Amino acid sequence: MAERPRGCDRLFRDRLFRDRPLPERTPHDRPPHDRTPHDLLAPARLLHGRLLHGRPAAALRAAAGAALERWPLLRRLWPTTVRARATVGASVVVAAALSLASFALLGLLEANLLRNAEEDARRQADTVAQLAAAGRLDRARLVARGVEFVQVVGADGRVLLASPNLIGVPAFPPAGPGVPGTRFHTWKVRPLGGDHRQRVVQVITNTPNGPAIVYAGASLRDADAADDTTTAALVIGLPLLLATVALVTWRVTGRALRPVEAIRAEVAEISDRDLHRRVPVPATHDEVARLAQTMNATLDRLEASGVRQRQFIADASHELRSPITVLRTQLEVALAVQDPELWPELIGGALQDIERLQHLAADLLLLARIDAAQPVAAVELDLTALVGEAVDTRLGDRVPVRLDLEAGVGITGSALWLSRVVTNLLDNAQRYADRRVEVTLRTTDGPGRGRGPRTAVLEVTDDGPGIPAADRERVFERFTRLDDSRSRDHGGAGLGLAIARDLTDHHGGTLTAEDHAHGARLVLRLPAAPRPV
Image (tube, rainbow, N blue to C red; front, side, top):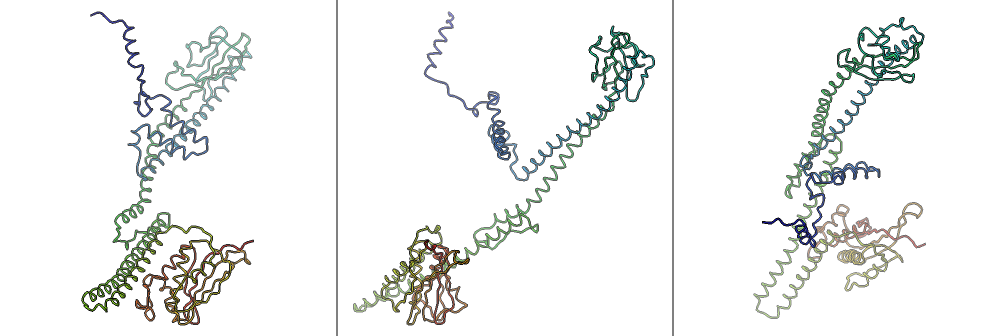
């Protein structure tokens, strides 16, 4: 078969892929060996950018996150527990600090020993150079403290003088002298044997016979031995010290987190039927102890809420069962009675019970809405007009209501809910008043000579049997009736004052029962708007 020309293959490929561009691969789709330096340096660039903006902690977290995202293997090796992360973090920091300290120690030790050897060699080289310049090399002392060898080389490369351990050794390079001065070198002089280094001082001087080079070498055997010993000690000691730090950090962190694990285990076992249980509080008086105390306080609130909820359900069930039972009895009697003249009376009684059930259901629904309500919207209201309207719209009150209202009392809140508060207070007063119900509205100034926040005070009083001092808080509980004066037959399910207080709390106010000479006195206090300037 004849071979197809290369131009045909190229033309075929161009036509095939002309309208089909290759999809661009992202850095995450590329294999590790195919990633560009731009992709591999992304965590470093991110770290550098955050450090430039003065956020080192955020920079480290961002760089770590970028590294974990680009190299999945690191995600599997990354510690997941607080104990492990604390141990790894402490070990890394200590390892970095010890490494820097070790390099600094070795550097200082090397510099100090090198400086000592250099001083000895320079002192000897200067002495021999002065003798050579004076033409008295024969009087030079070639043995000095800390100096290993001395060699003097002439301008022709001939050894003029040498210490006994360099006899027969050729001249050190450079063979010819240069500009007069002092040079410093570090060599390994093979003729002397051994692997230790020599700190060599080269002094070029002028002699009567021409320029000459004086070499004086001080052995660095002690420096090399000290470096080797120190390095060996660091190589052995640093891992042991690092392991000790990691072990201590692991143990200390575990001991510190043990109460947290006990709290977690106890909370995990607490269900809606075990709200009486509490987490253990360690005797350390630290953050963990405060966490346990806060958790127990939360459990106290949850338990109290559960108790109130169960009591509310039981009371509501009891309140609903009684009118339903009466209603069923009336309907059964109506079916049993054959006299049509009695049916209107029986049906009227059934309608009254149905109306009572309707009011009770509405109150229960309102309580549920109050418990789940959001903060009250800040709407400016005229409390004086709101109270007057609530009194004027009442029909069929048994006792007349006497008003004493300060004009222009402004507040913020919900008109619907505040009207319900006033209505419930008036209903309560009408239910137990004998001949008189009084409503008083005034404002009081705060401390600071009238510059403090003002308070709107609404008082509803009656001349009924009153509320005993021991029961002045209990009357605001749900489904509460006083034994001597309140009953189902007298009217109400014991929710009116409870609803009024809950609505008052949502408006940032207070509702209390206070002393009164004759009868009950309910006092409503709400934050008032500042006086107009």
